[in-house]
Length: 275
Ligand code: AMP
Image (cartoon, rainbow, N blue to C red):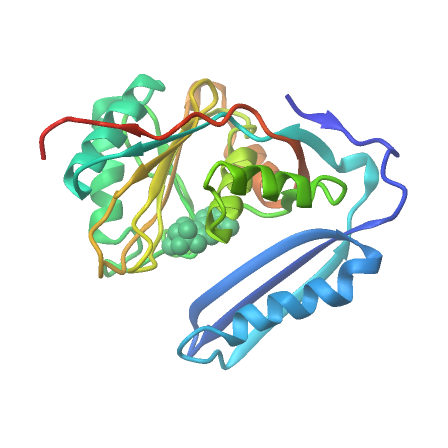
């Protein structure tokens, strides 16, 4: 459930976003929502991250923007489950089952999985954002197949950030990618008309992906791709019967959401389907 912050924040909050590229190719992006007194330090941390990527970026864009308190929503992070599978093929089979259990048709799940395997952007490349997929027909609905929709303006609440990060670390979820993906997936689960999300990274060394749905929560699957594979992406499945593209994109790209508590974290499970 989303709850309006409505004046509970004493210090103004800022959305801080940074993206780095070389020769027009996106290299990395990162963002936070922070109180004014942390702007300098967190900007430097994001810049350090952009300067640590290879090849070095030739352009770095940073945006800092005050958020209106009356537009900020609070929520809790989704339930978290983790699945170990014997290989990427089994991982994708499990992903397909979880998507279907969440209300996505088999056809749409398979279409999305194939797009991510083949590279969802034109020319078999990686997109900058996410695909939007009709959960029934599997049709792609995003206007731009290279950019897709970029989920933005979400973070842990400043008051709870350290506690939530250490609570996740206690459960073995300490990789910075996990926290960032969880916050992004958490926001997606509140989007009007959302049915499910499927994601795996384009980082050739990060093999864990996830499926999330409003009822089952965030389900990590490891591995969901082969080592060395530099393709990946995100698919957001929607129910078009109760959905407007403009409203969906506006929520994901513009409405600020802060997470201030954890839902349940379940122990690692093994999925024993043969590879
Ligand atoms: P990552 O998990 O950062 O490796 O991202 C995996 C894929 O998700 C990328 O290749 C993009 O297609 C997509 N993606 C990354 N960041 C976002 C975002 N903020 N909103 C929507 N999609 C994203």
